[in-house]
Amino acid sequence: MDKRAARQGFSLASALLAACLIWAGLQGTAQAAEPAARLGPNDRITAWIADWDLARGLAEWRAHRQLFDSVRVFAAYFDESDRPALSPAWAAALGSDVKTVFGPTPAYLTVVNDVTTPTGRGNKLKDPELVRRLVSTPKARAAHIEDLVRLAGRCRFAGIEIDYENVAAPVWPDFSLFVAELYAAASAKGLAVSVVLQPQRRYLAAPLPGGPAYVLMGYNLFGSHSGPGPKATPAFLAEQARSLEAIGLLDATALALATGGFDWTEGKSARQLNETEAAILLAQQGVRPERSALDGYLVTRYRDATGKGHEVWHADAATFDTLWRAARAAGFTRLAVWRLGGNAPALFDWLATLKH
Image 1 (cartoon, rainbow, N blue to C red):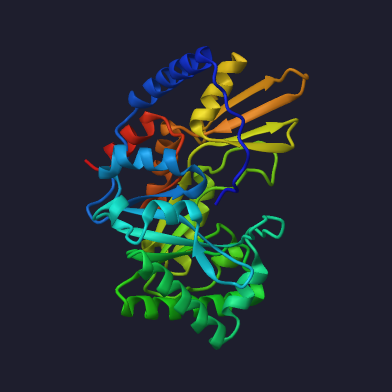
Image 2: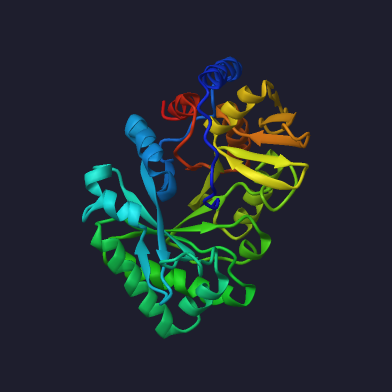
């Protein structure tokens, strides 16, 4: 998942108005296209809500809750003693029962391998060493599983989602054992289990335990680690589908598609943008994006006040439609949205077409 980043606010009324006009014009094109590839009767749509964008994420959820068959609460983090805990923002929002916020909709608690400290000075994102400590021995796995089941039960979550990234190759066999043991322990308590998978061959080269649901991160093809480009392409998604099919997991795996995008400066450093921020930025710069025919992303180039060149790639509803059509053709049947917060209304209009 993406990292929290400081965001610059834009408050110009003219920029907001122009952004709305950009949305209207671009989404009109999407609405004139063929009907969206629809989900089958047994398929599901889910989405994450992140703690650092809680207010906007919950607002979008409340306005469109009927679209989602489940929801992902992002996230629980680890302290310096390797103990997981719900983020303070979510703990305050949920109290003792997740149903007070989400009602009957099943809610998963997403647990990530980030270490957080009171001062923030020792924070570690996507820490592989943490995962090694948690899963490398039967005793460690048992203790960790007990912590997870207890944490999920405390707020009456319907399931536990494991989002442990950058797992070292030598640790992967122990991680697979952990997944199987977690599934057995959680099932005994009536909890579902989901596991997030990175789109890398080392994670998709060998069979994983049956039983849990899986979610593939169908993005990060380009991002903060690279120069400008799309988060995903049809060819990239087809490649992931083939890898999952080869290990017998395609039917059990949802595809996560990411909203928003990045603004690259001089083709190097990248700043994350959600769809709202991207539209306002483009309006403020007085530029209009072009549509990438291959993958549906909006692409914009401009120069800032210092003369530095920028290239923005970001997704909207038409992008999702392009990518989901390709994903369906490749064999994916379940869709996960990373994430709620800062999305244009057209995204939810498009999601509604999948429910018909």
